[in-house]
Image (cartoon, rainbow, N blue to C red):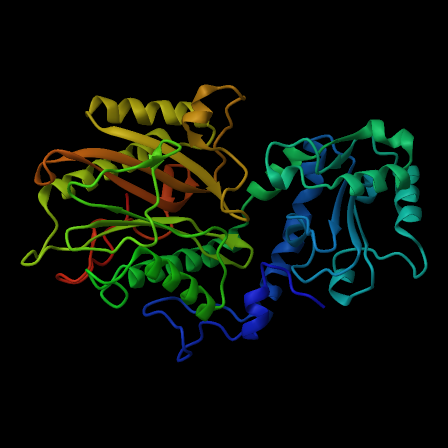
Length: 457
C-alpha cells in the first residue's frame, strides 16, 4: 500500500521522529508525536469536525456533499474529511448527506473495508457498487443541491476531476446534474474552522519552525565567505528529513548587501541565486514552513552577518526592523477585530503607517490545513473589493506576512527590506502570535544570535 505525500516521511522514519536523543533533534525544539499518535489525535479531531458539518451544510444550503479521491491523484480534502490514512482504491468516494431528522449521514464508498473507516462512515454491504449506493442515497434523500469540488477559485475548492464528474453524473443520473453546485463556500468554512484542540499542537509546529530557522541562521550552518544560499537551502531540506516532517513549499532565501541591487519578482524582493556566497555585512532572509499533523506553518525571519569587529547590527538596520514592528502592531493590535472586513483592516493599517512615513506592504493570508489556506486575506487584493470582502473570524489562524522598505544611512541611503511572517490566531482583542515575534536580527558569526523577544500585548 502506497503512502500519501503528506505522510511519506513518517512512513520512512517509522514514526520515530524528533524523540529525545535521536539524530536530528533540534536544540530547544518541542517533541513531536510519533506517527501512530498523530493519527489518533487527528482522528479525534475528525470526529469533532464531523460534528460541526451538518450545521455548515445547512448554512450553505448543501443537501449532499461528495468528495471523490482518485488513485495517484488524491483529493486535497480527503485527509480532512476521512481518517488521515493512505487510500489506494481506484476511486474512493466520501458522501455526507443532510438526512433531516436523522441528522448527518456519512457513507464511504471505497475499494475495501477498513476498521478506521467504520468508526466514521457507513460502509455498503459487500458487492454493492458505488453507482448503486449513490443513486439510492439521491433517491431516498432527494437533496436539492449537491455540493462538489467544482467552480471554486482555489485548488482545494475545484479538485474534482473531469472523469470523476462524469462518473457522478452517470451514477446519480443526468437529471441530478442540474442540482450539482460548487461546494466552495462550504469547503472554506470547513477548512477555516479551527478546533480548540488543535491550538497547542499548532504552537508546537510553530516552535519547531522557529527552532529550525534559528539553527539555519547560526554559525553551525553559515560560515561567511564559504556558505552559499544553496547550502542553507539544502541544509533545511535535510533537517526536515531528519525530523520526519515535510514542507509545503520550497524554502527561499534572500540576501541584501550594501551596494548590491535588489532584484524583484512579481513586485517582491526576489529569492537569491543558490550560487551566491554569504559574506560578512549581509542581511539574510528566509521564507520557510513545516507540515505536521495536517497543519502548516509559514515563517519568515532575518539575520545579520556582522563585519569584522562588529558586535551588533547597524542602527539604520535596527530602525528598519522597528518600522516592520510598527506595521505589525498597526495590523494586529489596532486594525483587526472579529467581524471586521479584511479590506477595512488593510486600509486602516496602511493609513496608520503612511501617516508615520513608513513604506509598507501587507500580504497576510490564512493558515491551517493549507499553507495558503482559505479564509480572509488581508492584502491589497482584498482591499480592491473586486470580490466581496471577507469578515475576520475569531479563532482563525493567519500568517502575518508583510514588509517595510527603509533607507539605511550606513548603506549609503540604500533601501533595505525587512520582511516578516509569523503565524497568529484571532482573539477578541486582535491577532496574537503563537510564539513571540523576532525582536532583533539574528547575528551570525558575531555575538551569537538573538533569543526571543517579548510577545505583543
